[in-house]
Amino acid sequence: MSVKITTLIENSAGEHHGLNSEHGLSFFIEKDGTKILFDTGQTGLFIKNAEQLRVDLTSLNHVVLSHGHYDHSGGMRPLAQLTTSFNLVMGQGFFDEKYGFKNNSHEYLGNNFDENFLTEKEITFQYTSTPSTELAPSVFVITSFPRVHEDEKINPRFKILKDGAFSEDSFADEVLLAIDTPKGLIVLLGCSHPGMKNMLDFTAEHLKRPLYAVLGGTHLVEANEESLAKSMDYLHNDDLKIIGVSHCTGDAATNQLSASNNRYFHNHTGSSLLVA
Image (tube, rainbow, N blue to C red):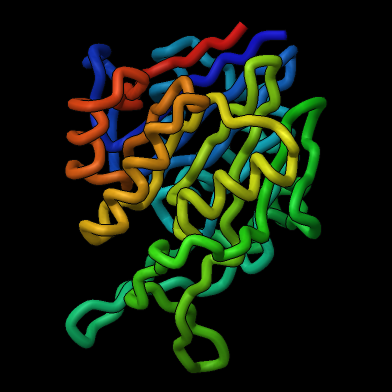
């Protein structure tokens, strides 16, 4: 059993200066011959990066989109020009119209495609209907996260437009990817809008396996001082051996992790994690 996870695109650049970075996230996962793409960034730049990193996207088995925000799903259209042979997995409500409010204005933050696009491209797709869906042996899509940690509150600026009216976005569509290994669970997060601790706790409890590594976005960029302190304590759990968070995690959190936690690495564009 071996797992290799390559960050095809992220906000920050790494040592490979030939790669493009953007505000977004995309992971390529290889496990025992199965190839999975988790998120597609906001444009097609992740495809160019894959070419530079000698990653073959034409033989994908699955694509999983963490939630319906542009910086995680915006590369689907360019990907469909390259290949459509994969199975696409999304959470319930993925195509709800998502907006961000600020100072009495609103901006569309959702997807640049819909179900009709997938049908026209003959892309096989499904919505998660249970808390866990096993894509491949020991590879799970997890959703329906209980909101247990009271400090993890979704910013009310995130809205959904439905039937001409705005309501607060609960991010019921958000999913994560969990890979079970002999060392424990490797968890990939998109943005963690339902709360990083809520998501990780539920995943470990539901799969009855300990956490080993967490990669991706934690949305601690919007956490207040008290909530950030609780999240830092949570990530200092001795059982969690690898912490590769970035994207929407924010400088305050990543700076603290870098200074105080030797299991942390800034997971930037081009980073790879190999677990054998």
